[in-house]
Amino acid sequence: MNYPLVAIVGRPNVGKSTLFNRLLGRRLAITEDEPGTTRDRLYGTVTWQDRSFTLIDTGGLDLDSESGILAAIRGQAQLAINEADVILFVVDVRTGSTSTDRDIANILRQSPKPTMVVANKAENERRQLTSSEFYELGFDELMPVSAYHGVGADDLLDWVVEHLPAIDEPETPPEIDESEIRVAIIGRPNVGKSSLLNRLVGEERVLVSDVPGTTRDATDTLLAWNGRSFRLIDTAGIRRRGRIEQGTERYSVMRAMRALDQSDLALLLLDAVEGITDGDLHIAGFAQQHAKGLIVVVNKWDLVTKGVTTTEDYARHVRERLDFMPYVPVLFTSVLTGYHVPRILDEAARIWDERQKRIGTPELNNFVRVISARHTFTQRGKALKVLYATQAEVNPPTFVFFVNDATLVHFGYRRFLENELRRAFGFPGTPIKIVIRGRQEEGETASPRRRAQR
Image (cartoon, rainbow, N blue to C red; front, side):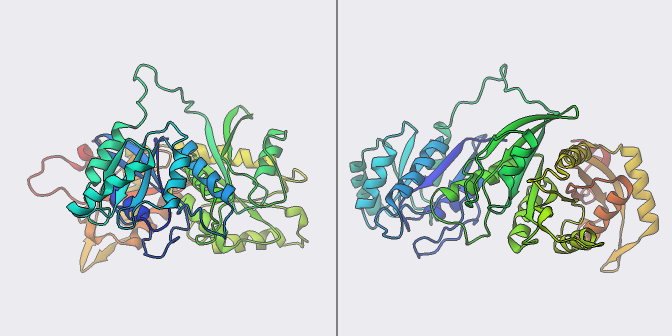
């Protein structure tokens, strides 16, 4: 779901990450007194008064820093303006208005986007009264809050929801092609993502450069292949946590993560010469967390000196490193020569079909009887019994298992269920979600079958 975007901006150390955590309802961002703690672009979904939006925590805009280029900093602020539907401009009541606050305000005032000056650290009445000095920044909207203590958070959320873009009328919903396969091309910088897109579509659709980080935006391209419709999304390179630089790169990573969130599956490009790195594993973990299908594409295979077992040995090594995603296929290609590139789309179509596959309830419960007869699990001297199972969703495949006591289920049993499901029904290339439900509480009348259908 492509929710409206709300960006939190401001100079360093005014409490942006604390406000982000407060509005999000959990401690996702790291908050320290040290300026510049926020290294990655963090985002999360907030639901308030039946409206949902994506909240972004940004790094501090330090216009006085000698280590940054003023144009790049202004570019980052401009990106915040362009990307966001609503802007929360955070200032610090304790320090008062600074020259950096005024410089940022000059940039933000050029946008017609709804902007609220959030006067943070106003936890008492005296500081709330002092916050009126920030009207000098030239905005009509100002709200004193204390992100740390939660003061004013509800009122701020009310204001945000009130200023979100209007929802389209129900009678004119956007047209979505449900058969369209949405594929995000992800990976570290300079592994050939844009070149792969160009090779697939047969034209120079996106800029290609040897300089890492050329791609800043997530670029959509529609493609028909073997009677199937694909939406290919080229994304910026994703670095490991802690290595993402200030400026436009941080917004590029945010866009890449949003592209992944809106896709059905992803192509994770590896550099065959460099091999699979910790950074690649980090990116694969993103796909797993988002429950997206994944294909590992080993690019630049033409540059590897090969022996009789080179391909098998290389694939085995990749799978050993990706042991937390054993269901992922590995393809070897050369974007430069076109070697095996068409196979990528065929494999993507196959995984998409697997993600749409639905197992009938009778067949699934026959599966439950078979595995229950073959394996017995006990915990604390009590036998675990699977009473009933149903497939609740597709894309990704989601299964609900009703058991006699949910507290008996541990990680090993979930892994057992996943392995058995794959052995019986397939699902290559895609995560499987497993939901465990305990026997209904005493006094409930609904059967597991009826509850699964709710």
